Image (cartoon, rainbow, N blue to C red; front, side, top):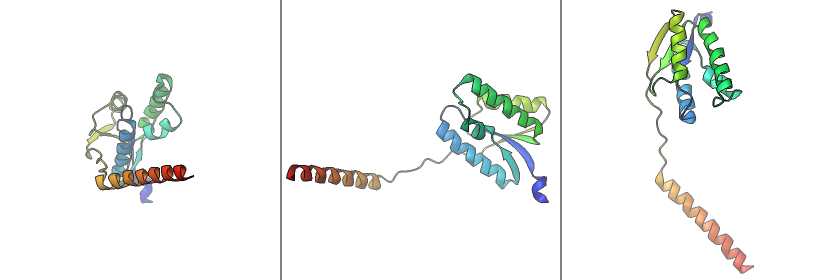
Length: 141
């Protein structure tokens, strides 16, 4: 079976800081890896669902658990469009210590969602009309 031949790849990308941006970026990294016929593992998307990344003890537990997956992987892919965080560097250092392949990749920064200003103004206008209508009905009654 071909699916059993996929490389197990630990993905290193930022998480702390701008968490929302970094989560979106990590999802894009995962897709990029999947499109390369790899089996990606992103501990920072998994463990942060149950561990508090802002709590130093829980963050350390997550990083320790993530490092054990590096041992079982075929390589580490480091996505660098937003730089290399301290947590990423720990993963890189451990992979290098194990003499695993460390591959640096870039996929570009996240696209900013452009808000159509016309729709914003229309929405504000509708809200104003609703507010005025409510005031009129209160005064009438």
